[in-house]
Length: 119
Image (spheres, rainbow, N blue to C red):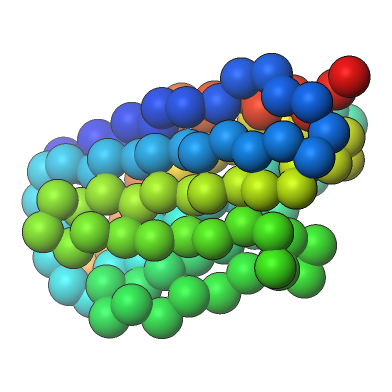
């Protein structure tokens, strides 16, 4: 069994910064992908950023240059540093652990953490 737990989030003014953290525990073996997704009210869940166990990162175009994802393989942790936040970044943010080598493929989600960007 795998557990994914997020922390961080909150209310911040436009232009501000927030840091989200995620810890995954349980039977997690390489290769895997840890990532952040977000869902705003009335919209579909969308990818924000991912990082593989090998360190390869991927970002949505909307956050490139503003958000930075980093990971710790030993601790199975992933952080998302969010700078220059905009009101359109307001959403529930979810951490995701994708065990790409598992068969069948297993994907685990955290409970989500709210990020609100407002003055």
